[in-house]
Structure formats: C-alpha cells, structure tokens
Image 1: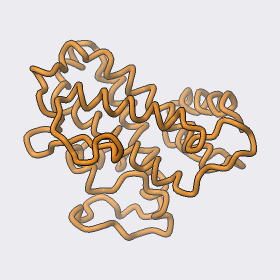
Image 2: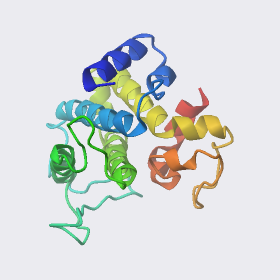
Image 3: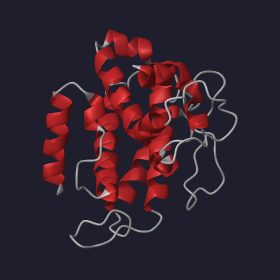
Length: 217
C-alpha cells in the first residue's frame, strides 16, 4: 500500500470517528511502512498545531523546555550536540523539527523507492521521534492550554493527542488491559506485543492522568 492509499485509509477511518480503527495496521500492510507514514503524519499535525502558539511560546515566556515544574527536557542530537543542553521551548522545537526533517529526508532511514528495505534499527529511530514529539504535547498541555482554549483549539488538540496516544500504545494496551495504574518507575513487561510499544511508560508521566483517561475509554 503506497502513501496515497495509506492516506485514503487514514481519512476513511478517521472519518468514522473511531480513532481505534484509525491506528490499526491495515490488513496486509508492512509494519515499517505504516510506522513511517504515521511518523510523517504526526510530525505534520504537531507542526501545524504548534504553529498557532508561536506568539505565546517565546524565549522570554518559555525560557526552559518543560512540562510543568517537575519535568525539564534538554536537547541533544548525538551528532552536533552530544551533551544535552538547556534551551528555551521554541529553540527545542526548532532543533527537534529540523532533526526530524533530516531523518525523514534520509532515504537510508526512510526509503522512498519501492523494494528498498528499511534499516534494521528503524523501530528504534521511530521510538526516539515519538518520544520527542510527546514532549511537545506535554509542553503545550502544561504551559499553553489556556491559550489553546482561547484560540478555540481545545477539541482539535485533544483529538490529535488522543490519536497520538492510541497509535503509540494501542497494541500494548489491548494486549494487556491491566496497563493502567502500573508502577511507572519499573519497565512494563506485560503482554507478548511489548516490542511494538513506541514510548516508554515512564516518559508519559507528565500527562499520565490524561493518557490513562484516553486508554480507559
């Protein structure tokens, strides 16, 4: 199934209003292709969403990339910046979006031609991308939710985040529906589909209540 067909599939399933259907791997589809398509889709969603907040999220208003007072995110890409550095939220976003764009444009990581295999570490790359995209949602909810409400974008934000959570945790949650309430200080080990988990449960703590609400619906 090619990109255009995947987009049609996503449009149809999202149009039903059932996000759980939208995140399912389409029958006969390659998992890596599905992951790659959704990385690009979520990247674009968050880019557009954050773009509405640039006047509220500035170096002076958000001097630290954080999710409330307890969680601070520092930037490192392992290449140009090897040691994590403290940056403002807008700077973190700039670094992150540029870094993801480089990954997406690298055909050794995201192959564009038919028949070209994904690298063996592709799931690991995807997990890093989703982990960092989650941090944007965490920052928005903790620092800019009132601005979102003022812009009338609350429903859109909640739908985007629900889609994101269901995609990154769907297989896990429905394999072991005792996930909620697990001790987040210890690695989750339940369910035979553990390898499909895209974000470690400890990373979700800044929005744990919201995530649990989404997964319990």
